[in-house]
Image (cartoon, rainbow, N blue to C red; front, side, top):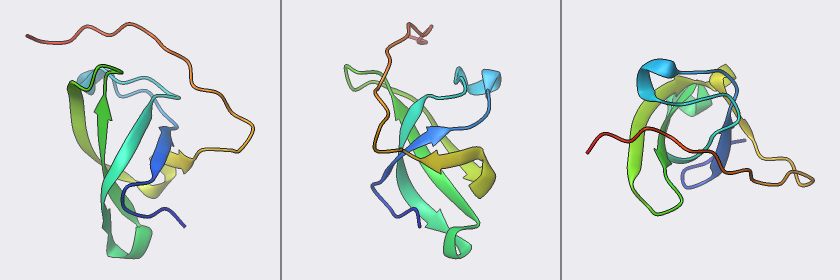
Length: 77
């Protein structure tokens, strides 16, 4: 079960927020027993890209055999 402060993986593109499938975020709030979560997505330098409320099927837990991958994003000033 996903909990607050867990790192999670986005399962779908969210171009309106500058996010892509497989981006990693941090759960800041779990809603209705896990039906949804508010997740913060940040650059590796710590700048917040988006804080988005998502349904449970839009995120997943990180698997033990996965490795992070970096990509460039257009960040508003």
